[in-house]
Length: 99
Image 1: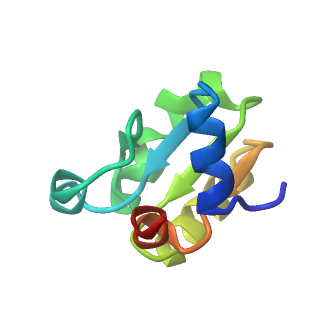
Image 2: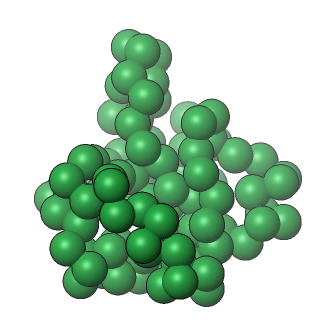
């Protein structure tokens, strides 16, 4: 599935959509600022938390970090575990916040 731009995500949120947003930054980064409605699971904890996300396997999940690197790794990990609609937020939280 194609990745998503900050503009597209903000448009969808403005239209009232509530996509599943997974923040894979560290907890302290999330505490400094977050995307409304996002769930924080740091990338290092993701492998042990995958079972908790099992019911989301067929739903769209938008993953993000600060700039896009860690979330690309998270997207790959989730895809390997059978998640079929994972999208990386291009530019990460930094790009989202700059919009």
